[in-house]
Image (cartoon, rainbow, N blue to C red; front, top):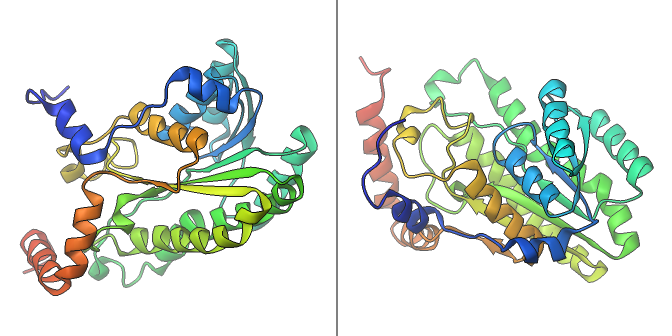
Length: 289
C-alpha cells in the first residue's frame, strides 16, 4: 500500500466531506424498511447495502453481475441481515420493468431507492470519433436507466404516500467541466437535473429526494485513471456513510466542502477557468505530434 503523508485523513475529509450517521439513528430510520440499491455488487453500492442491512433494512441488491451479487447477498445473510439479489441490466428498459414487477410482487413496495449504479469513462473527443456507442452506453447507465427505474417505482410510492430516492451523483456536475470527461459528466448532469425537476412534482405526494454529490472515491471504477489514484479520496465505506446519511436524514443534498467555492468561482471566472483546463489538457495530450 502506498504510504500517505501525515494528516492525509484530515485532507481527505476537508476535500471530500465527512458524514457518518450514528448506527442507532440509521437503525431507527431503516429498520424493517425495504431499500433497493443499484450497483450493489461492488464499491459504494456494496458497502452501502451492507451497512443498511446491519441497521435492519431489507436490502434488494441490483446489478448485472449475478455471481458477485449473490455473493454479497450471501455475506449479508450470513451475518444476520436480510438481502435479496435481483441481477438486472439497467441499460435495458424491459429488464427494468421486469425487475420492478418482481420486486413489488415479492416485497409489495420499496421504501427507499438508492440510485448508485454508474458507468465512468474518461476519453478525449479525438479518441471518440468512431465511438458514439460510448455516449449511448454511458447515458443508458447513468441517465436513461435510472430515470426508467424511478418512473417504474414512482406510482407505487405516490399511491402509498411515502418514498425516498437517493441519487448518488458526482461532484463533477457541480464544478467546472473538464476535458476528457464529456460523456460521463453530461450523463450524470442529465439525471441530476431530471430528478431535481420531478422532485417539485412528487414532494406533495410524500416522495422525497436527496442527491449525494460524491467526491472522489477509490473504487474499481476510478482505478484505471492513474491521476485519480494519487488524489485524496474516500474509501467505499466512507462514501457509503454519506449515502446512508442521505437515506436516513433525507437532506436535499450532500455536497463536499470544495464544491460550492469551485462552482461559484467557475461561474464567475468561466472563461479563465476553461482556458486553464484547456492548457492542462494540451500539456497532457499524448495524441499531439
